[in-house]
Image (tube, rainbow, N blue to C red; front, side, top):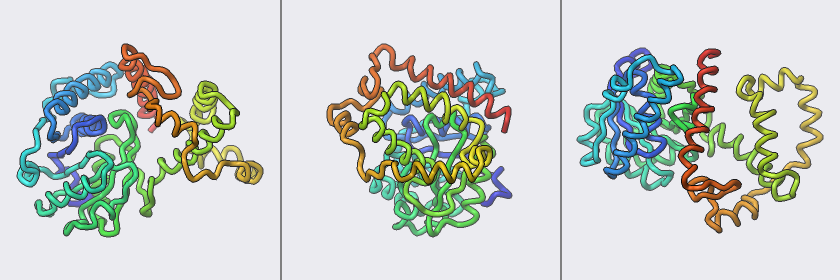
Length: 319
């Protein structure tokens, strides 16, 4: 397969029915492609099915899809894993969405390494390199990396990253497939931990840790400042576009003044580690930088998604 015959991709398998898996499956179904979702946990499959149904309702409410809910959900089937080599024999594209545990991912691809050569394999990972995952595969030429962003059914970008053995055909097909389902694929041109966005996010998080630990700003004011300035602009102008608007000479002078004062920490801040050690891990525990009562958690997630859906409406109009 290559980008000239991406239309031959009729059946996609998503292995893993967690939060990312459900978002990925929904995207393919909304694009008219049949999806088989596999997991070894029946409750996970049931939850995945219900969450997808709810999320499609939201897409319909915001007029982001033109088909009925029944039409879209009819394209998704759910299966308990039995024998993956047999389960996947008739699919065209496989996306692994397992936890970020290297041996787990390696084991899966070794199990399916002997599937017909026309089937493309993708690993959804936020940090691991394709070469490390596929190093024991015989068919590593058809393994490619995808990095979806949470919530995967809403955020348009997908980073595409490759391994040493990934073929040009695999890259071309994957780029064409992501475009077909309405995503904005970005090719990472060299293998590097964290790819593009997580490296940018990591750099900002390091400075955020420093500012909070030094008492420069409160968590609440920091969020307000970012959402009402840098983040507000980023929805319309990328950082390189913004730098052109500001002027490269101005950016260079500002960088020369600020860079020497930035944090160069190699480990997370003590304040962050202390919170983690106390079990204050965010909305899933009920407390992080903010407090989340149990009876308000679901509504908080729904509110966040509603804001993102409104943003997606504007994004689709302008792109």
